[in-house]
Each structure stands twice: as structure tokens, then as C-alpha cells.
Length: 151
Image (cartoon, rainbow, N blue to C red; front, side, top):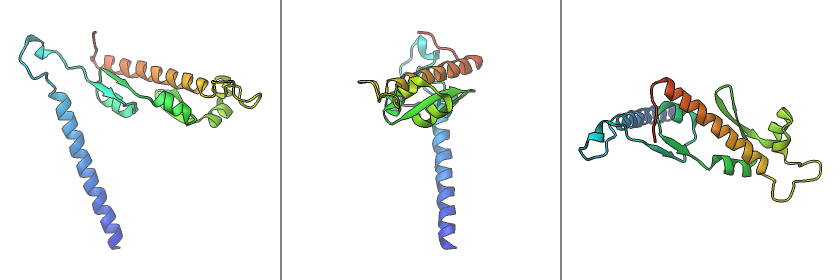
């Protein structure tokens, strides 16, 4: 009984701390400034999300840009990303091939073995395509809310 109470207390504490961190993040995003007074002070600051590809984060905060090694690293670990119906989904390459019969993901494995230097090429390609689809989706989402970026 005491262990359950400790778990509940820990959960409440973690929830409180996470809520506080999210409020701080929101406040910081709303108050970003360059630090010097100049006419451009009224222009928004462009924020880059280094290493962030979590869809919920990209939908919640209007980052100017984001990048991640997810497409490359995930392919090397056998993951295939697909952007389907507004959601970025990931699964193992064998499950993906069974479901989609996608020869690009299979890279010829099973018939003659992997082609030289290409064991992950098809998975990398599909993962990059999924990230680009996510980028278009998030950009359209923010544009619909009136947030646009100019270079």
C-alpha cells in the first residue's frame, strides 16, 4: 500500500514539474527577443529545433526549421517511416514490406541478398520522403494559422 502511495506521489510530482516546464517553454517562446532595441524588434525571431522530429512538438510550436538524423539512423536500425493520414508512423522494415510489398524498402533482400552498399538505401529514401511530407504538413498547418516565414 505504501509503495502505491509513493508511485502516486511521484506521478503527481512529475506531472506538476512537466506542466511547469511546458508553461515556462510557452512563456519563453512568447517573449523571444534579440536583446537590442532596433526597428526589427517587432519582427518574430526564427527558432531552429535542432534534433527535433516529434510531430506533437512541431505542431505545437512554430519553429522556423527543424532537423534530425532520424531518417538516416532509423534506416540503419531497420525502421521505416511513413507519413499517412496526417501522422508520421514508424515500423520495422520487414513488417513494412509485408504490409506494403514495397520493393524499394526491401532492397532486393530475399531474392539475391542485399545489393552491394545498398542495404539501407531504400529505407533511407522512404524515411526522407516521410520527413518531407511531415514538413509540408506542418508548414501548411502553421500557414493556416497565419504563421509564415520569409527568407
